[in-house]
Length: 281
Image: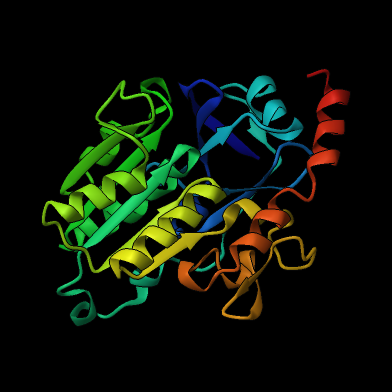
């Protein structure tokens, strides 16, 4: 059993849980994910590892209340309760984790984070920052109240830029507009990583292609089973078919078939709506 050691609300509909899982904490690398099953009959929920602590033997996940399973996990489980299964780490770590030290020299990263995608940016930015690679992070949200992980990311990067659609905090506009503004003012980047809603990652890719910045995107939102057996997370990259869970979750954004990926992300909407109705939401 995997005990919940901490639970807190980060923003409306977004919650953090720290879970006791020593072996997973010791093995997790930036970019990887885990799967939680709350009880023996529960749905398998893939979630990106948002932090890990090898001393405490814990992993942290951030959950957004979207479907029946996420509502159940947040509403029915409290500190001291345990989940039936927490499996991982799964998927491939971020590309830079396996890069040689000489390859990392001269790189300068910018992360564009949106919504729930802000949390998994943290371990990636921290890893690069600890290895001496310059890192800037752009966090975008609709309003100030929806910004998360700002304090943690402020310690894990060289510069943190906050953006809100309504101008209630930081730059008024979306993260891609902030990136263009930074580049127009003389900032240069060799690599970009975008994690967030599918539409945000699509436009981050288009922006980076215009700015001639290579970009990696995380397709974890497509995952269902998390083992490659269900086939739900198929994504076309460079004209070839891959599974987000076993071949990713990160891919070259410039090669992703975004129209197909966005259609696939909506494929279970009717089933999700029916499940929520049966849950009473």
